[in-house]
Amino acid sequence: MSKLLTPERYESPKEFFRKNSEEKIVLAVDLDECCFNYLDGFRHYLEACGYGVPEGQPSSWNLAESGWVLDETDFKLKHEEAVANGIYKNLEIFPHTKETLWDLVDSGYQINFITSRFVVNRQHLRVVKDTAEAIEKNGLPYSNLMFQKNKDRFLADGYVDDGPHNITALENIGRFVIKLNQPYNLHLETPSANNWLEVREILHERFGR
Image (cartoon, rainbow, N blue to C red; front, side):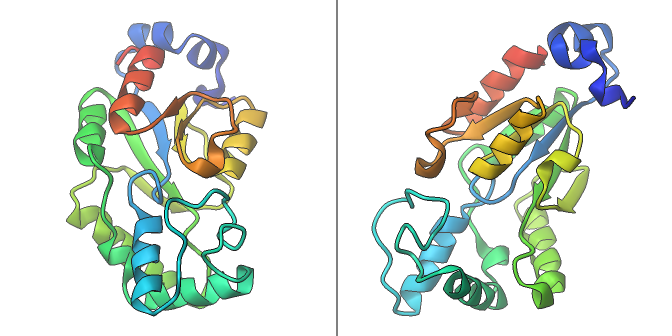
C-alpha cells in the first residue's frame, strides 16, 4: 500500500503530520482557473479576433453552453489558434498565488502541478514549452509538472481544482479536494475557496501546517 493511502495519514492528517514532521504534504494543483486565468486570456483572444463573448464568467463548464463558442469543434479550433498565438505564455496569475505556494513549500508541502492542457494532439510540444516557461516566468514553485486529464491517477494528500468532473471523480474515491469557486462548480458541496488566501486557511486547518 502506498504511504499516501495509509488510514492514519488520510483520516487523521493533522495528527499524522504532527508525528511525522519530516514528511512532505503532497498537494496536487490544477493550473487553469486555479493559478492562471485562462478564461480571461481566452476572452481577450476571442474579442481581439472579433468574436462576441457574453459578459461575466461562464455559467457552464461547457463554453458552448455559455455562448462563448458554437460547439466543441469550434472551441478546439479557436483554442488551437490561441495556443499558436502564445496564450499559455502570457496568462495572468491570480492574486496571492505565488506567495501562497511559496509559503506552502516553506511549511513542508510538495507542490505538483497537474493540468489537462493537451487539447489538440499536434500542439503538445508548444503547450509543454509555453506552460513551463510561464511557470518559471511567474516564479511559481513546483516539484512536478504533469499533463493528465484523469487527476485521480495521481495520489496526493490534497487537491486544488475547479473542474466539476475532476472534483467529482476525486471525491468519488475519497480524496480531499479544495474547490476554487467558479459559477460552473457552485453546485458541488466540497471545501471551497474564493482565492488562495482561503485555500491556505483550509489547508492549515486540515494538515496543521
